[in-house]
Image (cartoon, rainbow, N blue to C red; front, side):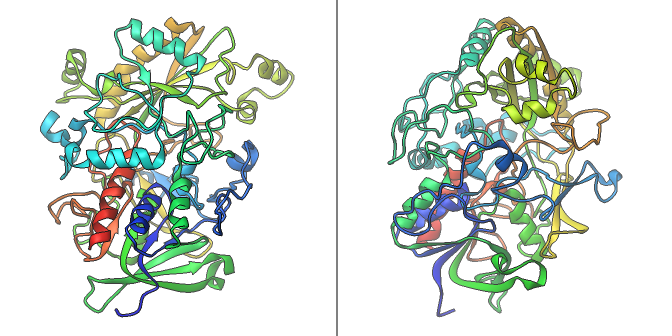
Length: 565
């Protein structure tokens, strides 16, 4: 290949793609990003300011799919196992924004690091029957400098004090922001039980940072972008890369194929549909030629692209070992206002359930398991008004219910992001008959939790409920996602049948053995010489922590290697 359009082409503009573009352009490389979604957020012309399309509008963002994807035009399907037939449901399955800025834009920006032991799960705790528990091919120590670089690039507000956190070589770039009122109550109750709540590290400005203002605590963080750009989402890195003059972002560019040289191992670029030109066969096919290809479309769309093409899958592991977080929600309603719909959604965590103790060993033994492990627990708020209105009873009591606001102003939730063990049967593949509006096969999830997650959830749930009651809640109950036991397939179920988690990981897992993994320890595909992965597909295990900072740290590490390749 002699003539190229850019040194590197990146598929996806979310946290991984934006981080890679930031690193590569600062190293002098020219980069083209292909983003399937539209651009509503960032002007692609100097001075690269906000477009002003965004607002704290529940209807626009939650129901009319401003940031995409529209589940009618781009459906996904889900089933729990082969026994469910081809699918249980079609529509929104773990959908993340499909727009310039990608999946990181919608989040409430909790950015913890993984523990040192998370990179050595098998060595630390041992194997588990029915799960593919492995150590990562890299250690925390290897990734630590990249964690620090990612925290600085994104802008993380946090503080020392969590006794479970690993060592760090650099301080947090910003101090934590103000505490939510509900968090002060639940944190005090947790501490009285001997737990160790702390102020969560978040990618939300507590002070002006990187030319962006401090958060005003409007409450529209989770599921929403930030109209004033106080959130450290991928836009800040994309803007920095654009200002070098070496990045071009192409929205509405739906990657369909990694083009290959005659040797079958060397990529020459990426072919894509210009979806601004039409749907179905009307969309114009275009191509970008580059020396290196980076796939950063996310742990759902990256394996979907590879499986559609039959690429990079000599191990048969593309799409397999899909993990989420098995979420346990303890919900409590208080007899007074918490103003839980204001603030940064989550200001406190506690991590005690990530480190098994004697009680966890006894619970595991009773269940016939070698060990169980929970996840970080988020102390967070309630619904926004439209969401509350949809769950309040219809009819004459609707106004009364809304004024009482038990599901918004008085609601507090503890969410455990339980570690999800990798299983070969949990996977993303291609639905045999459902397609999107361009005629491409829809991605299909097959997923059921392991017994380990179910036992851990049942073990920790009573403690979560007790925290809420001790904090002053009138009542508390626990629910999980996905639900356990017999489930109601009614699509109006607020938590749905498929996992509600947006933490999708593990479908192109990292490893030293090409027969059991998809990419190597550097993020390069075993089957391809110049194709790399820079998203959460590469996770070997899920940990019990929010994945975005680790995703960015891995992308930072991989992009440095791409720059020198």
